[in-house]
Length: 377
Image (cartoon, rainbow, N blue to C red):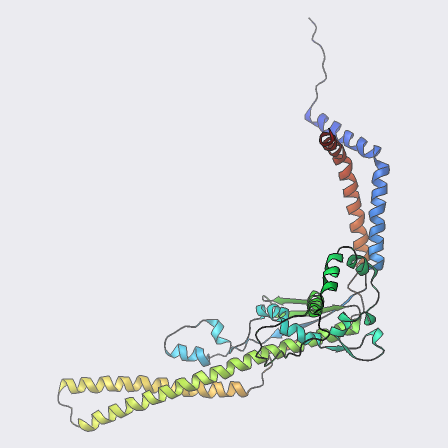
């Protein structure tokens, strides 16, 4: 009996057949793939051409740590008493750079940035505030993509906003520094300006290298640099005020501790002197033991008194010092090149997305038809 020669189908042959089937299916649907990819490409071209131009200006600052070799204030007092308060207490009240993003996101800080006066192209050479720019359409160029988004995706919010009648035309007069207000109330307009400003701010604390990068994005290059400078100066003012308050609190604490230590020292001195006057010739062991104990109390009280006197003088000097908190190492510069839109990236991205969607639909379509038939059956 002759053995039939049957073709042996290997795993590689199976893979080749699968790939061939895939290529055939894509070739059959090539017209659909090309058309859908072209549609996505046109959408990408539309977005790339009509996206508003943006400029980003940045600056780099180096925070001063405020550390001192011997330790001062609360840390020094704690060290005398044998207590370790950690490195956070040795910074003379200086805020850590990791807190800067939270400061910038705060409502009082953003309200200060809202009041920044700038001159834009449509203000006819007259200074206006950022609040005016973001709330008055006459100062902004027409944004086709923004208008489409506003009346499509943002239409529900637009309707709700139109139904509200409690809008306030101006922002409340609040001060960032020295303001005792702890509760803030944002109007709808303020909230929209807050979101716009926060979306344009960039801050990147680099804890490894010890510097912070600030930046602001705006449709006009000069204004972007001006607001970046305002961000730096406002942040420095906020951090300086924080440090000043902490130094004042530290001085009060040291002075109170100094007065207490001075009183304890005088009491210990008087007790030792009175005992020595009353016992000029120490003949008993109990008398010598008492003198030793009183002298030890005197030495401890004198050491604490002397150290606190030094700490008080250091705290007074620290309050009077005009120390730079943020050192500007790379000032804001008016950018010459736009930061957005990146048209080539947008076009390539939509082209790739169109290919992926078209190819994906070719393979999903049969399953979608089967599901549709089952539902309608």
